[in-house]
Image (cartoon, rainbow, N blue to C red; front, side):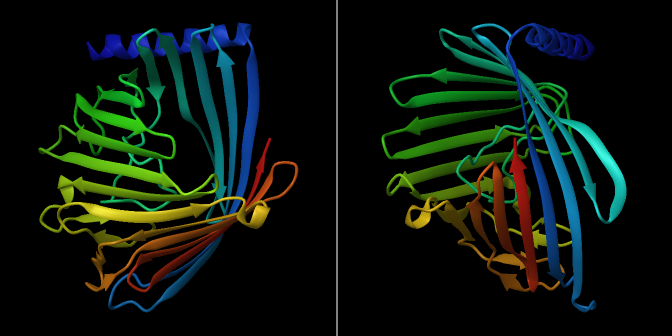
Length: 312
């Protein structure tokens, strides 16, 4: 059954992309050069060490209309870091989406995002479903402002078992919105509950909060994040609050700040710390963007990243 399902999905995607080649196709891309400066303490017995390196990241995107009701997308990613001179090339994402009278159906290789309003910071150490050979998703509009999402992952991954599924209820009003989601990972009775809400102060300012409870964190289990550092989350909901501001002072300057309300415990030092991410950016002309990120990702662990981005 699994082999037939893989064959069906693969054939459908191939036929979709082949049909796209005969229809209207658009190509665009995203070139990024990231410069990292990490300052970490890997254990209480190891002194602080610095790590500075660069990363080249090129994404080539293909968009096309198979028909008036079916769209297809593929993203080819080419990546290299100064730590490793070899180049890694992969299909980072690909899917086909069909629109029906009752809503939309989507299938392919991609991630389902539980916290669409977040910028960078995780809540409870999890935010997206893993990419699998075949992800199935439906979006069904209900009453005015309400949309129901359903996601099915047929194959096991390192964090899910066969038949993992998620459901989400979305509501969008004029200046605020809410998403509530539940994910049954089907692996050792693990599940994930998440709430993601936002409020638009005006056209450029947004307040948002993500709060999630991931059962894997029960009993103070470590979850790996960032480089070689580990973080321990408390049981129960883990709220993260944030604020984003675009077109600051009528310019192309933007900024955002995300802050974890509950403190984290560093699994190496066993000290508490407050995790946050600050982002600032500026949009130049001709698709060139400059971005700066500052992370507090562990006890005495800072991480800075400067990005030069060109979209075409």
